[in-house]
Length: 186
Length: 185
Image 1: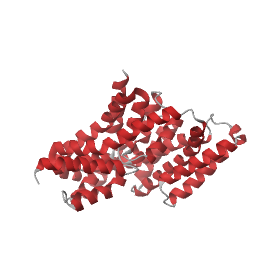
Image 2: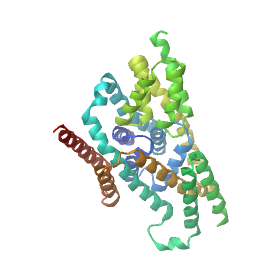
Image 3: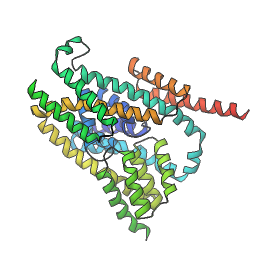
Image 4: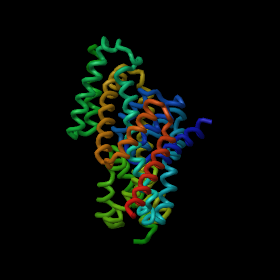
């Protein structure tokens, strides 16, 4: 039952993501890749789409994957799934939030979760790098492929720009322009 | 203002926040601050700080957590529902449209060329996000150990994400409790 598994997969993502933005990348990646809903390349493309459309990353990714896999109703199931844990947990916490804030158990768990999320994103970034630079697997033959050097160039330029605080949407547009241009030239 | 009259305003405010913030959770905080605390005076500035702290330390996307919490504080359960629906709706509709468009044009050569370039750019965005998370994370031997351990578990040994998260949370909890006990002595 595709709708139920969409709902449950994103319920898991919603319930176990700590922190904003890319913190949910490792979990989403695992869910969509192991179930065969998206390929690594599609996931990366999607991150670009999500960065260039308004709204929370989590909702964007749930809607997108849901609609790819199960149409409009699939999108609805996935989005509901990703929101529900937040909604319920916050309603509970809101009633006793001062106690929650001062809780040593909560701050202790967060002290472990924050570095863990960094390690997990680093590992996801490595897989993304493999998909970007070695689309056909880890072989040296990419060195003869012109597009390897284009990717490398775009990556280094983008890295420079994002650290100079250029807006992500601008960086994505620029990368798209370079990809388009070199695609027709090479 | 009567409580129920706040509901449509809450919905519309978060609809606007959802429609005009790029990049999720943290990006919407300045907007919430302007709309909720300064313009409408529904909450105090320090309430908002509490809310953000909680949104960060409860599971789930920060944007949803913040919307639910602000809605609840302003107008109870109905408020939470209105704010959350409001913040989600624009994303949902826009992404439905975008995914239909991309499916239609996926075969176009130009689109696939553009995305080949974009992928390298996205990698840079991830590296940047990683760097700013690293800068905000407290630096001590236990934190470095957990970063390394979770990286190895996921990247090299292909553990699944959930057990790694739970293990690290427990490790952090034990470290914190042990340290506190030592400080007490």
